[in-house]
Length: 259
Length: 92
Image (cartoon, rainbow over all chains, first blue to last red; front, side, top):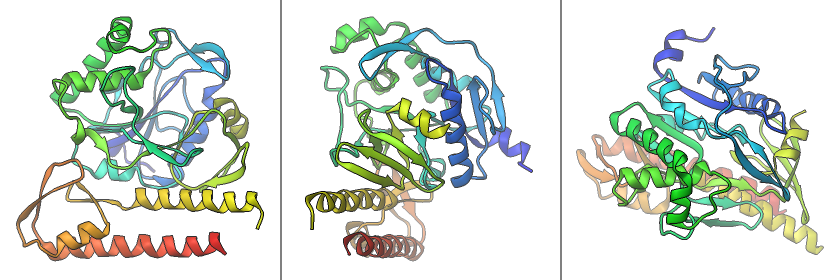
């Protein structure tokens, strides 16, 4: 039996789930299973459409419409409600993860144990090209932070960060022109990076950076199978297995592997 | 050995290295540290009550250097042993 006290007052995982042309609930369900396997004592809450197997659920309506390019086709995508995480989370310490971020270890526990009140990835490891790098926000010199895994604690500063995040989303076209990126597809990664830079007066954000890269597979890599401790992939160069926490960009093949 | 096999080994070794790199990070009294050779060396110079900077440049007081060193050595040994074992499996 899970502790309700822990569920309400301590720490937990928050997953936003809105279906689009893909049944994201299937992917999210597998994501929850991976969390259960590797961090069994941490409660999980779904937001949006309910995910099977979670401890808590908060229904919210569809957020502002957005688009994302899947393969070569632009499709409807609902990813613009995550700035509500601060208000929605019942915990003092929360980690918001994308449903396409699959745990294969308990590495994420280090974020719960850290005393930093806000943490996100800045470096990314491109599994295809065996390359670790940092992207910038459009043509600006602001380093991009990934909104895929976001650890936060409820403090006044963090609350301000979430307000700024919302403001950036609401004024996205303005920031797109200012920093030189496309206004047509709203990226939370850009929004959190700009919001945090604003919060820090465009000074260093080093203290908010998770000190290992986010491991990511590109759209060109297919997921062929998912097990508790490993994910099987295939690309043009062959098959391979990943046994660490992984952010998977090829949603269609991920969905097929989760069915 | 075929080119495909060589590539596969190289990729598996890179993935293993990345996994171990991430695992090197550990939390000590709320601070994030790396259990690498540099930190191991640095820990030898510390005294009880010294302040060190963690990976996020946040100051962290090390109350007991012995405890810090023990944790550090354990993590370092555990990860490198695992790396060695997995490396052998891939490379042979």
